[in-house]
Length: 419
Image 1 (spheres, rainbow, N blue to C red):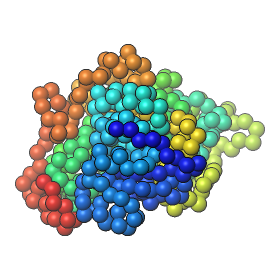
Image 2 (image 1 turned 135 degrees about the vertical axis):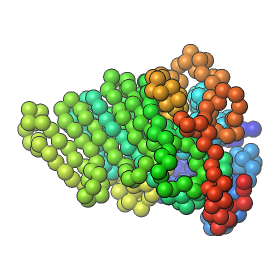
Image 3 (image 1 turned 180 degrees about the vertical axis):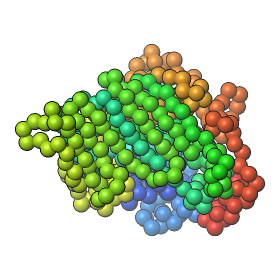
Image 4 (image 1 turned 90 degrees about the vertical axis):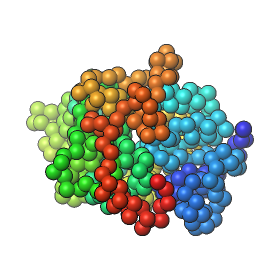
């Protein structure tokens, strides 16, 4: 099946897969000159509601959706299922923007890299956290040598939930959030550091933090561990520490140590504050030893302030549209997306080996692709079989009967009719 590109000047017709998270992309499309023309999801009630609200064609079948007259697709389906959907869209001749993560297995990553190369189409990995105002400001400062070269950094994305909240977020015993290992959702913590410093991860080792019997929140059906710590060796020799994912104490935080200074967003005080600090011997004329301020967006500030995820949801749409119009590879291309996915996957291998280091493969190179093209290692339930890893360092952690009963109560209230 092939679709002829119909982009008329600046007009880009786009379809969105997923009417949960995908609604942010759908609602934001007009702000960057894209026209929403189709939606696709298997949850029919929510799909029809969204289609009626936005007055667009709806599909429950992905193949039929791909035949719609459009130029691009946004994939906001389940976390680990993007790559096969992306490959089909690229083979159809469509530009693709995909939510995190870029691939669910190494083999899927190889297939995606090959499909992007073969298609010649735009692929953008929709990682939104780099586009917070303070992260964009840190990139500007880093590019201007404000703190020198990266030596060490920390990235933290920690988002705890109570049992009710987690069950609402993950309807179904086999929902991906109920099986995700503690290292897989790493891109919100890692991507801003890669963006600020233009570095790439080349090696990881990691440790997972298991659930405690004293934890009072016992009525979700999640099987994975609540936390993980990843150490990444970057291509310039620096070290990046990644922390997440569901420990007590919500936090989104980034800290950059360079050869002539430090910068970080503040954990407390005025939201969005940035701190830049220099030692006395590194001060240049006009420098301050410490400066704390709240940066704004350098462009499209009004649109960004109206968007979700600190403006990031606007900028992912914006950069996708710009890449299509200019036919230019976006910053968060397929390879940066795959690097982050492989950090999560290889870090989980490390956790199960009590911290053994693993390489981050460079899927730009066909020789490396060959080594991983049959690597289907996966914790996801649909891939269950001999040799597949558990979602926790303590094994498969089947949920209790009480937890299942409570989860079903929550799902019934939501109108969810699945397993």
